[in-house]
Length: 206
Image 1 (cartoon, rainbow, N blue to C red):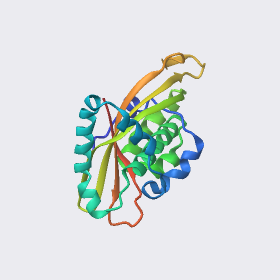
Image 2: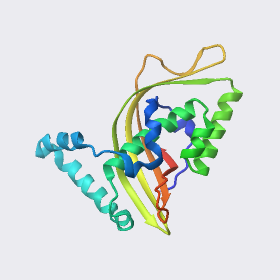
Image 3: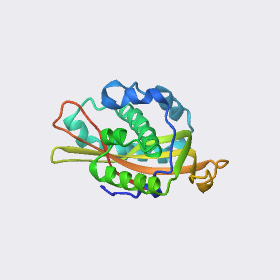
Image 4: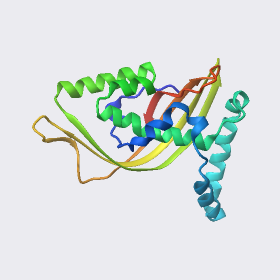
């Protein structure tokens, strides 16, 4: 599950609403449940919901191990925090904000981010992101062993990404094109700790 990803391929990505930062320190304790999302699912025709119901049931089963150590684990709250973290981390990468990344990602991911940021700095390039929205953030896998828990979240989002040279010429991307991005990020925490401090430990794309 721990696949280290080259950020040049995966971090194409995302703007951040400022108040999200306040949500990150304790995802599972502070986020409200997403009642509107549930209502939308319940309104869907049965024939269209069968596949998603099966995937949701599989995800619920995979959460059994985590619920053994935290019976009050709140999936909706976790995903709200994971969505905020996704946007914050990508924004920090685009802004070369190493201090923010250090608080939110594990050593291997941080090393990859720092390498990519250094390369961009050496080339005197800047990355400009406009976040359109995240249409999906869902748990697709979990693992609990040896005092640690890992949760894989699949994101589907849209954004505009443009890399410019020191002369403001476009090196990559298109300021007029909205790009669809699908990522799988793995978050981990120490289960023995009373405070669940989830960190990004791996990324991969589809």
